[in-house]
Image (cartoon, rainbow over the protein chains, first blue to last red):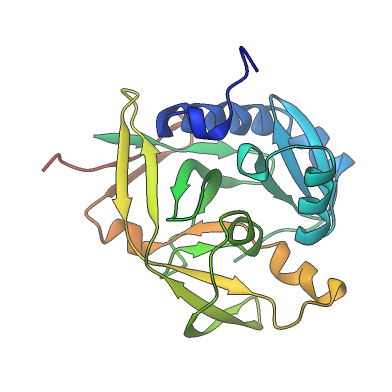
Length: 87
Length: 144
């Protein structure tokens, strides 16, 4: 499809730029997202949350159902509202 | 060469975007830099996206009081972006966490772990600089 780049057409750097853009958007909206999606995995594409779920298998299934390539989204883990994460 | 990290003030985490390449697939993700972790860990979600096989057992990883089975994966490349917009490739083994069961309620524990960039990354010769006040946060390495 003209004008649409898939993962395979992009360079490693293009992919990184896409990841960086999604990460910056995520950080800028982190507070809102944390409140809206506590304890979830979220998938971000083009500054939009395209899927969310409580576990990996469901998230990947949702992406597949929506026709979204799972290697083209940024997946972030959102902790619970009052949770402090220490690894 | 320098790699910039982003500070997430809400979650209070340092993150770096990375393109990850395996022989099967390529994807991107973010890693949390954690000087408390000796190893770089790939979370279960990203390992599933990258279709990483769970072949080589690599002991037990203890996180927050819980124990998880770890697998080693060598055939992986990380591409970082330098501040002057160049790709920087590093190749080093990672440990992958795998849930002990495929029951959905047990999956959620390992699902919630992020990718972690550990001390093994600094062992590749990268120095780490961090000033949260000026938001100057980066890895630096002299070019070969």
